[in-house]
Image 1 (tube, rainbow, N blue to C red):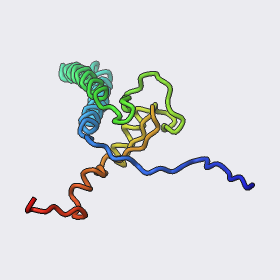
Image 2 (image 1 turned 180 degrees about the vertical axis):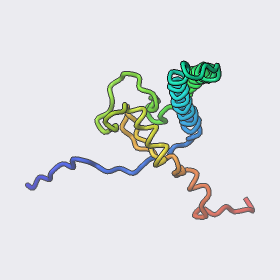
Image 3 (image 1 turned 180 degrees about the horizontal axis):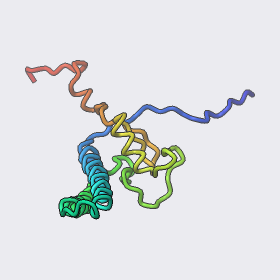
Length: 159
């Protein structure tokens, strides 16, 4: 009797995402939040550098406006990332909830699983759910819609 070695890493095809719009909206608001954070930190640095030499209120108002927009976009991005759920396990792959992650999920070392999924969607349009380990391709159409558009099942107009 011959035994075979188990496959250590099984490569699976990416599944299609039926409604990727929620993920795109969540990524838009999260990237806008990150941009607001950078703008706020830049305004704070300019305020701290120039408040003694050039006492202008422009830097202070820029910082306070940036802080306001950062807090608003944070609230919206958290709400939108929570609304974007995995179609298979109903988890929130863009937002870490503290639950155990699947052994097939991965992350980029300095970031958490949610931010890694966000970066991967931005740059490759693919995602790995951290809770069920399923790979998704946001650009791939579902097999059901591919089957309905194809000419493999001709429709009889007389029926």
